[in-house]
Length: 364
Image 1 (cartoon, rainbow, N blue to C red):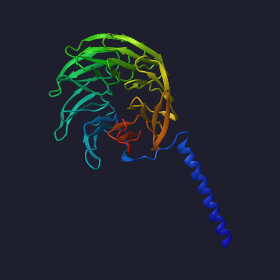
Image 2: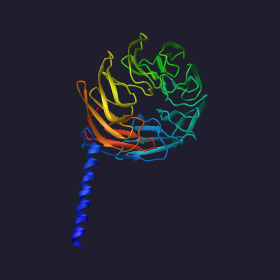
Image 3: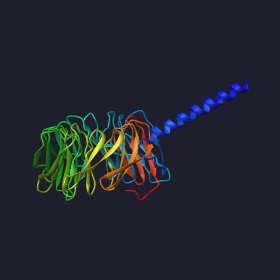
């Protein structure tokens, strides 16, 4: 009897070692695993978060039950403030300005909400709002799927401008540093320049394919991705194309741009990288699973999360980007990771918010 027990225990231990061996191989894949950090969760929920947006003390996001959730990292422990704004889903980025939150919902209502007071004012547009608002001069600007860009007085809610744009607006407008113009791409394939003072359209470039995400403005150049499969750089002053490159069709994201590189956020395991000024190909990011859009990094270090929740860091050596897995959250993620201080934040598709704390506080 004792002999049989010893054999059973030995078989169980052997099986456990085999399972652990395969588990370690599966987690590491072809990339080393970082041990220089720790990870955890900030919330688990049953409804998805909207776009995570950095604010002075943390991040803020809407969710599918019409709440605004403000995660603060000022103290020793993260804190969460929850505000019930409406009964409709909020997927757009939330603008926080002068103690007030400005955001549109998927029923087409734009809200100005203040903690301790409630809704200060609201305005119903003709269709859902999925893009964020921006503040310029003394106006709040936001686009709607009703093909109109609106400008509101932030205090009274009076609509000062309505700019007809010919196609539904999915994304957030972009403001130039001088606060003279807004730049907006939308689903009719046109990139527009809009004068803030008058609300007049002063320039249009037609790329004949929807521009589903907002342009990125860096050093006077606008970078956009079209749904048809182009990455395009536009001189915002001269209002002409500097370069354009073919990428994978079906894009629904904006590129990620640093001082010297532009990452094309296409769908798949390989993201091409281009020289920001010339548009020349200079390498790629690779992963063992399809990647969510890259949103965080620098010229030499980039961070990203796969659609299955693996968080990676890529370190650059010339044209080669070496991949290290930081952690595996084991969740589904359509949005990329966001950096706040030395925290890397990842929202999953079901309402969870996770973090990875890098021990290296000098990381970009």
